Amino acid sequence: MNIIVELFGRILTDWKKEFKKTKFTFGGFVICRNIVISLAYGLILLASCSSQPQKIVLQGEAQGSYYAITYFDEQGRNFQHEIDSIFHAVDMSVNLWVNNSVISKVNRNEEVTLDSIFIDNFRIAQEAAKLSDGYFDPTISPIVAAWGFSYKNGDTLTPQLIDSLRALVDYRKVRIENGSVIKDNPAMTLDFNAIAQGYTSDLIASFLESQGVVNYLVDTGGEIMAKGGKPNGQSWIVGIEKPADNWDSEQVVHTRIALRDKGLVTSGSTRKYVERNGKRYSHCIDPKTGYPVEHNVLSVTVLAENSVWADALASICMVMGIEKSLPLIESMDGVEAYYIYVNKQNTLETFASEGFAKLVVD
Image (cartoon, rainbow, N blue to C red; front, side):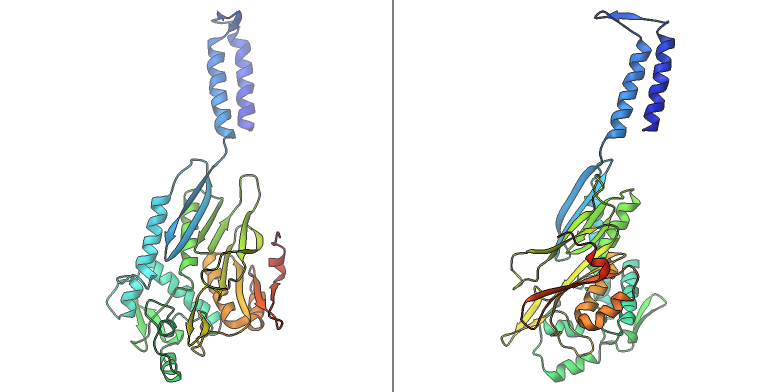
């Protein structure tokens, strides 16, 4: 706006000078040609400086779920092609359902060049495993598949089978050396599903920022990364789902929060489950036991500096439960959590960490 004021100051000065020069009459008014040109340029600049950033919304399906990306861009650019390329790159690296992805080849012990996406996910998964003392473990893939939560059908489970599979679950027995994955037992396999979508949201967010976009909301299957807010200064408003009765139940918003410059992820046990012999089992499997968790927590929403760590911590909290996970959350700077659980009377209750409670808008 200071530039506009300065420009019009110069125009007014020119008016006085040009008024004494070449003139012509139109409709009874005396008009200076140069002044008209100067005013035209001034109005164009004023219009360009006062234009609002355009809202761009991209939606679709990827990674077996949905994505919804909203951002504001002064140039009105559509980044659909670039974002599709990011989804494809992640799929070709860490998607278990893609037969020739890097992780699929690693799991089959084939020769493969590890890319940066795989290495990043491996590193973050190992850090999450150490942080949680093994309640998060990227080598849990054989047990996940046996229960029927993976790309394979569930096995006929017996305590003996679970015990044998647990021998393949230990993040400390797998590492990267000289650009290759080294396993103490070749039968061990990796699974980054607990963090891959959060990682994807962060990757898309990084791309948008590289293009100068500073206000965006990236949602990849519920793994959210937010930056800035709306042009009017308001924060992004994000809903937290009420735990569902079944996988196909209608989505109902339980709580809304104001979100800025943070990652937000909800992990729940009510939509992802299998039924065996009439009993419902959660997809949240405890690596230490090989069995799905059976505590009273239905969902945990975690707020962190980025989406991939919110994703990892939400999974950790769902496995550990409130009593074990809350001290971990409270020990971490910039991390908050919101638990929805069932009390002894079988009714829903919630617990929010202090920082999370400040964000609730209804």
